[in-house]
Structures are given as structure tokens and as C-alpha cells.
Image (cartoon, rainbow, N blue to C red; front, side):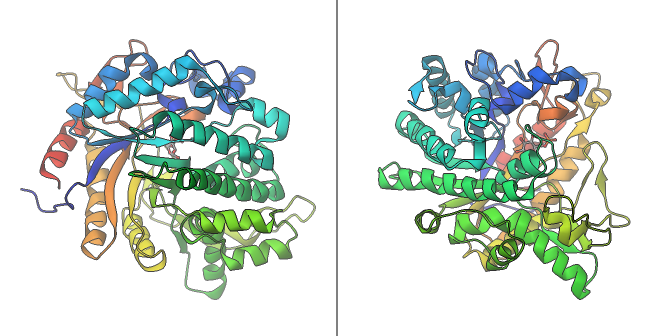
Length: 463
Ligand code: BG6
């Protein structure tokens, strides 16, 4: 029995990215991860790099058919800057790259699947880091805008939903704070500048999209990973720490994208610390005047915060962690494989926050999911992986999402990360997320129990 129906035309879908499903196969230029694997392969789980990943480059037709078989009506992937563009400054296009993305888009449309195309999924060209300092550089914001325009020019006759960046705060955290993306720098001031420049890049792409008429019949958004911030207690100190963490990790990108401005409290704090970005009035106006049409929300885990207890080493460069400590709440439910808390109500809290504080902008869940190690042990005699934990995980999140929609949240879809198990950066193929399993040796793909379950959900438009 279907107890919870979702709105008409709800997007049931799944998301992946170019670097993670098609990898570097047949690519002429390298991104930061391709390069990092070349110099430090031992960092990557079992030494598995981005060469073929899930072979989407060669098997996109079969893969899209499988996605169709799940009953999904929408699919997000990304165009790799390093695949499409041969020369980042002249914008000379690599013909193979353009042809590949044309075929992927056409195949989606042939199968009645809405393609949602992202322009940046952690995959900065290494050349732009080496030459200009990557996201630290204003010049790179122009090169990115040029790349975005090239994508609109080539594909916007068929692609009607664009995403400027996936999880921009993760780029900032990974590259400049916590060392999980190359170049693994620890420098809060550079992190802040990179955050400003990525916001500016996104706004520049939106400006081109709108000014040059690509928005006719199309929409453009951003995907942010929101980690609702919960204070350990309602003491003033804990609440303040949680408020600051929220401004830095969530609102640093959400606010400019939707409201056109940075949170005041955050800019004041960064000024006081003398780590505020360099930004001209013209750039601030570009951000202000070029906002997104919709938001994609990736939700995996909440952020639990307590007032700072550990001492701050003032001889070290400034870090946002100066104001808070992470709090390990006793009894929290964990996905032990990924080390992330499972908290389905977080999705409801996000929905209500967007409804009440962000003008109820249209949004969708662009990623949610559960990465589990060693799923082969759950394969039954018929060859199907019985991933009941994933079904439970999705169901619980959908229930909270449904409740929020009933209460007026403007959510138009739910995408799982990911349709087919794909490459997880440094974790490579350790944790599997898909509705469809991948045998890394044979590249055989088989639908998991959760995939069969999703067929019913999408058919009934509800759970
Ligand atoms: C999101 C990213 O952060 O989470 C994906 O958009 C990523 O690229 C996914 O793969 C799952 O995280 P991870 O680190 O386990 O791959």
C-alpha cells in the first residue's frame, strides 16, 4: 500500500559525476585527482585510481538503460572540464569529449530521463592550479565562466537543468583546510579567498546563462551539501559555536547563491580576524545580481557542535575551528563504514529552513545515500545484493521529506548517490552506494534489492 504520495512530476533519480563514473579514460588533460593519483597512488584505497572507474565512457548506453529500468526519470552527472576543453585559455574544444557528452545527453533524452548537468565536481584542472593557484585566482574564475559558456553553447539546446558547482564548501575544506583534496594545504585565509572566488565563478556562469539567452526554457542552480548544525546544549556558548559553524559550512555558499549576499555575522568575523577575502564592489554586485533558480541539497549527515574546549594554537594559521569543536553525541546512530552519523530528521530541518529563511526557493535532494563496505557478502543465491539497510535508510529519509512537503516545503525531487557503484575519490571502491552493483574486475552491473524496491517507489510515486 502506498501511504505517502509525492507531488506530481517528482524527480526520482540518482547522481554521479564525470570523474567518478567515466574517470580519466581517453582524457587529454588532468584534474587535481588524476594528478594526485599519479604522484601518490598509495593514498587511494587498494591503490585504485581514476582510470576507468565504472566504465561509463564505454558503457553509457547500457548504464542509462539500467537507470531507466529502475524507473528513474532524472539523472545528474558532470561534464569534466579536463575532458571537454583542450586549451583552457582559448577554449579550444576536444572533439572526442564533446561527442561523448552529446551522446550521453541524447541517450538520456531518448530514454525520457531528464539530464541534470553539473559543471564542476571537485575536478579543477591541475594546469590551472600549477599556473595560477586554482581557486585562489580571479583569472581562474574567468576561465571557469568561459568553460561554462562553452557548455551552454554546445548542449543547452537539450540540457534544461544546469548546476554550476557540486558541494563548493568541500573544495574549500579538502584543498585548504583538512587535506583530503590535492594540494592539501592548511591555510584558512586562502580557504576564505577560494570560497569567495568560487561564489564569484558560480555567479559569473549564471550571468552568462541569463544575459546570453541560455535561460530560455532552462534553469540553473547550485548543489550544496547542507550539514544542519546542532548545538550540544542550549547554553549560550554551545549555541554560538553552532551558529558560527553553520555560517561557515552551510551559509557561506547557500546565502550568496540564494540571497545574493554573504551572512553579515560571517563577514564581520572574518574582517576581525583579518582573513576576509579580496573582492571588488563590481564582483560583489555580480554575486548579488546573479542568483540561482533552484538549489540541489546533498544531505548525508548533521554537524554536532560544542563550544571550543581544546586550546587554539595561535602560532598556526587561522582556521574556522577556532570557534567550535565537533561533538560526538552519545548514542548517535552511525554508518560505521563511512564514519558518518545517520540522522533522517536532518532532511526535515533543512526543508523547513529553506521554506522559512530562503523564500521557499524550489529545491531537490540532489544526493543522499549510504556507502557500505563489503556488500558482496549480502549477495543471495539469485545473484542479488540484499541491501535492506539501504532501503531502510532511504525510506526513513523519504518519510521526513514527505512530512516537510506536506508542511509546505518546495522540494521537487529525490536523488540517491548513486545509480551504479562508482569511484569515491581517495576511498576509491571501498564503500558502495548504488542501486546497481559493480564488479570491478568484470565491470558486470547487477541491480540490488534497493534498485528493485526503487522501481516500485518510482512507479507508485510514493512509499
Ligand atoms: C558527496 C560528493 O560528497 O558525497 C560525491 O558529491 C561523493 O562526489 C559522495 O562521492 C559520497 O562521499 P564519499 O566520500 O564516500 O565518496
